[in-house]
Amino acid sequence: MKKVEAIVRPETFRALREKLEEVGINGLTVSEVAGCGQQKGQQGLFRGNTFEIKLLPKVKVEMVVESEYVDEIVQIIQEVCSTNTVGDGKIFIYPVEDAIRIRTGENGKLAII
Image 1: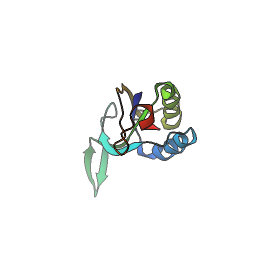
Image 2: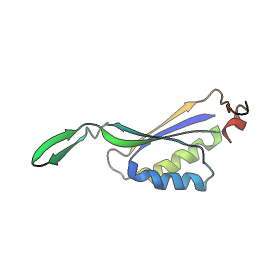
Image 3: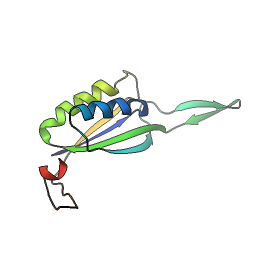
Image 4: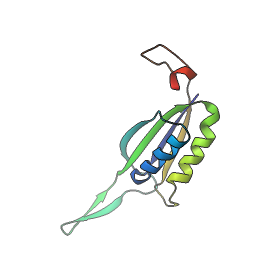
């Protein structure tokens, strides 16, 4: 099993969720986060005053899936969330040793389906 974690632009999340549902990925954890990378933030203007926004809003999408689905999921995230501009986000992939469903005690593959 692998954990796929993607940090994406908020405006791309709805399309990503729809596409993941189409391929049968329904179990997601979604968090509203803020961060910056190469974007280095941006400048805003409020009542004639300039200010810097150093952390930009992002959405973090996390899912644990069977290893054979990772490449397909990564491809979907890249296709749906890419605007070809700085700030599109990142994808991280982690090994998962085990998963246990609290309610039933099922573990491994049974716990994530």
